[in-house]
Image (cartoon, rainbow, N blue to C red):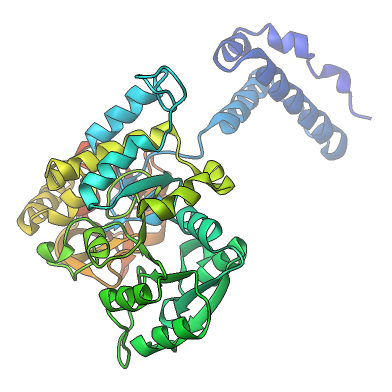
Length: 455
């Protein structure tokens, strides 16, 4: 039987100066838990594997490693050198400096989130974005929830529970994460009424169904992450609105991407804008805050006050409503649009509008600094369920490691992690999506990683 009496006691280890420092850093309860677990692991290894007794120093190092693992954040900043501007897996839109500052200020203390400063009584949080949304879009009112999927669910639940909602089969979409229009319909207890075919729907399809049965809403879902090509057709948004209104049926436009600027002005295909939806007469428009709007994650509903009242009063509205940090971020981002300073302040639009000569100059400076790789032409993408298949010309720093996968892993394991991409056994880094304040860190990390022999 192994001699377990040689295992030091908890009290003995707690007296060690290094453990006392760990207690100061991590707190006594967590340190005791880590010590207890470490001692039990040692005991089991001695009993079942006849392992030698580690030294006190080795035990304490194990405790420290366990504490660091437990408290290491799983959410951490990364450097996006992938060339995908709205990278859903990387949190989509980075925020403007003004937006970040406003969020920090609002987070630091109390706010008038639901307090009316004029009356001294309870107020409504919806007012904080309402005025700006109306001023920017021309809509009567607006409401902010936690994401666009929540916005659609709330609209359907509030306005169409047990009622019929008309949707073209060309728009029965699924976006990332398994968000499917038919599934949301079922969750809201609305009845899905399909018209048209997978590739074609005609205006008479809408009119025939509107005349045939009672319809509560017509839902138009924008093709945010795919394109219909070849033999296909759909009526225009204005045509659908006109025929729906003849039957007194409201039209809800799930626009998704949240574009206020015309992407065609930046060499991309035209992405339908919020202003166009309002101008076409849509009764409600839903869109994301963290896509082409360039703000924090949010779902935004704008439209007619008569439809918004039951939405704001629905029980789901409380479950999905935005908090003070989201509202601070959205309102500051909207202010950039009202002040006509978007391409100077909002990072994703700075990236989209960045001159190709500037990108090449940055890639050349990276190559010169590293003394490695080559600068090659390539492409960036918008991503994030916006402008599907659209690409922008860019210049890339291409590295030629002997083991590309190992270099990619080393980049991901650096602090901060660096996200690149592989093509033709080359590791590619796109300057377009690297934030200016991260560039120096990126280069230092690359130098450190590339100096390793196996790279």
